Image (cartoon, rainbow, N blue to C red; front, top):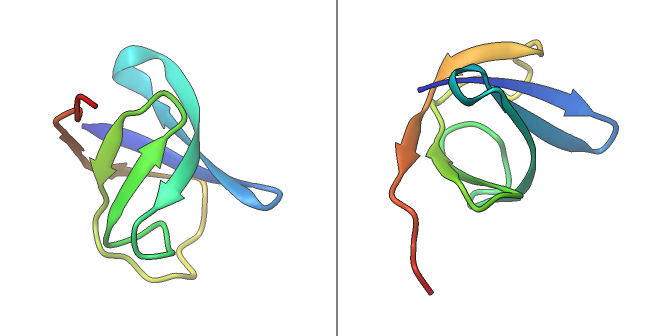
Length: 71
């Protein structure tokens, strides 16, 4: 799924064009936006591609949406 990532002050935001949805990134499993799993404020989780930490933003990438976990 296409996801646009941008840096806003001290946090990241993700925009999903297919859903016209913009959400704050609230968790990064490896402490960085790239190469791990991120969680958005609405609970959606994405496996992000591996990229350099200094990748220019905003950038649109292909990320894999993970199944939602029921608590």
